View (cartoon, rainbow, N blue to C red):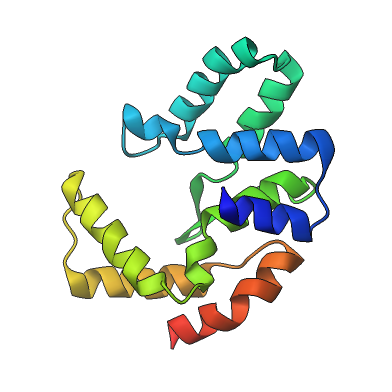
Length: 161
């Protein structure tokens, strides 16, 4: 949420769009309560079930679902990347906020926690393999918004080196 709010402010998102984006940010990982991998559709289902109770319209809920689903990694060629609708600023911000840590100073600490999380959820990856996967992922990743590029690209480059 803090990354989404920061990027949204820098990208000039206000009003209903800000509310929808923040709601998507709050729901994007809620699917973990049922399943670790590919949890975004579960988050969408939970949002669809609960948000009408808070006054969200069907159109707003559909928009939130689109934003949540934009963060799913897809295999394009030989690399996993996010493929948002490039015309949708909320999807771009959501993707950038989801992978905000790639360009932060705490990237390695966050990565170690993610490795532990993956290993605790059935994926066994040794440390050397993990660093190689992280390096490949970093090299294939690009931020979408100008705000994320300005805030995170310099540190991301340092993290790759």
